[in-house]
Image (tube, rainbow, N blue to C red):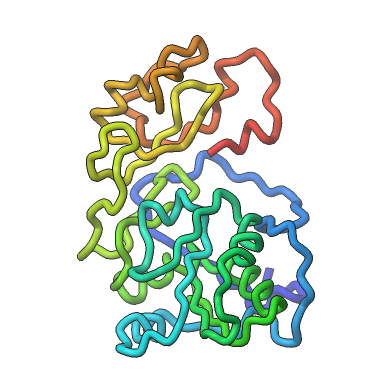
Length: 260
């Protein structure tokens, strides 16, 4: 790949895992890697001011002079279970909601901005967008949360990092790995996600094991009484359920196949 023009400096990220976290590999052509759905006027300098390496990011977190705005450039269901201390975690469900969030937030464009995401891709796009919108000084965490966890042990990160595979969430900071979120049913500290067993809902929500058993894997009583509720699979309770169309007779669409 690096022999192809434009891909000379492509970074490959590796992570160890005891199990195979991906059910299958699919390669598709997309108009955007992550959809921002907003036109970007490319500035002279792309991607903000540059990167902060993990050790530099930690220094910034530990500096007595907090002369920056720290932004979590991930969706709300990701930041809900883990984030850097002091970060602004926008309540948005999709990446393409960030431009509207930025417009409503009224952040000082002269203020230094530090941003981070899981692996760095969303920061590349949103830092460029912010630069085009007139923000003066923008830095991003090089390699994202995962790289920081590997290099700096996750210092100053609370909770876990949401990932888009069968693990659902991974530990970042062993010193502070306790839940910062709560079960949507029982309210007990919890950071494990499940998909609602009502296949017409399929909502991704935080749920404690005992509450999941009590509600038969559903997010509400209405869903629990649904005729389209799939059987509760205790052994695979905390694996993402993407194949919900298997319980229907309809031919699956691409949108169905990508349900979290």
